[in-house]
Length: 439
Image (cartoon, rainbow, N blue to C red; front, top):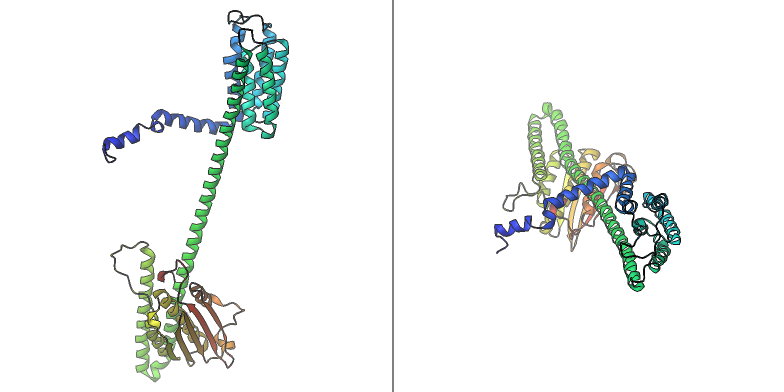
């Protein structure tokens, strides 16, 4: 029979013991009992006392045999029923506290047992001593277990010594010792099992908390990334559009041709911004694209810096752009980071230094480093932006976040001769796990 045979699957799913309906019903019943015991802990202990009384106390009251017909001689005496009931109550009733006060319950039952042994009486309710020993192992302090075992051995040893001569004492002691060992072993097994389940529940709870925290951190990182992209796309293009619109409105009367050119540039800038927004939203919607799915649109890179500088020039500032090394050979993620940092630096120059400023931009690749220098000639301390120790806004923070993805740094501040300078250094080897889309 193969593993794919339907008969094999049917056997595997239906003939296993834990898949039997009876096992499922018992499991559900066990869960309900546990839930009820948490709400009303006295009910289960009371039920145990009732069961012990019916099974072990009642037979001693209805059976008027003094031991002869059971094969015993007069080794054990027969008490009147009131005394028997009193001893039975002393043995059974302390079981009500076997979980809350296991040491006290065991001590009371052991004391009654010694009184009973002193009187020379044997009762079926003596099984309560083993139940209390089991409860002490399960619910009590283990440091008291040796004393409890010694007391139990002594009590049952006294019982064995009073057995009739036809019962070998060593055999009786062996049986009693095995019974004590079984009670202690069962208590340890249940205690260890409960401790393991508690550890597993705690671990599951901690894993759930950690998973929730990871989800929150991932969501926060995604919001930060989206906010950074939105700031770079919208902030830059709106700054260019506003500058072009102001210049076009001023030039409409004096130079209508330049006003028309400004309107055309506004349209081109708006379309580019719309395209970048669509690309970003498309990436956010398609979390796991198909392997053969075409790329929505290439991310801007170093090759697009010329067009970026041209748009800034159209808004007024004179932009001088120089490159060194081979920027086009950089990784796509590094190129996107370079583009966004340059975009933010030029946007800040346009907003703060004015349209009459001169901007010198240099992107140099040296071995494993990429150096970006952007300097404008506007008044750095007055209009180019705040000092690094002040509120730097989202733009500079976004540049630093992007640079940090590649072990990079970004510094910005007023230049000694006037104006504002932004310097960034990137490592062409990204951190483990970073990709081009992560920038």
